[in-house]
Image (cartoon, rainbow, N blue to C red; front, top):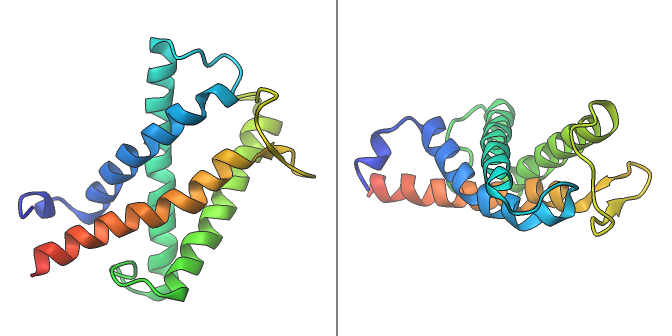
Length: 148
């Protein structure tokens, strides 16, 4: 583990985030039109997980701005989880709404549960509410392990 911890924190955060978001992207692919689990879908989901890594980085930066510390996620309490939840929700809703309603980047199948009024998918919003906490937990564990 010591070699892993020589990488800058944001690099580790990005790698963990991509690794955890990619299976989620693949799992929700059937909820989007045109996703047929071909090689193109696998690639598309990989690229989407790279974007998710950037979004989780924004959540990290939000936490750093609010708390004033770079290690705000190491032993998270209510404040850290509130930061993760609030920033994840705002980012997910914003990205999804713009991508669907303004840029027409993707379209849902009938299977996608929609958030009323906003008319965006629940599943991608839940992704940014659930996975960042897991990402930060894995990152915190690796940081604590290196400190011991």
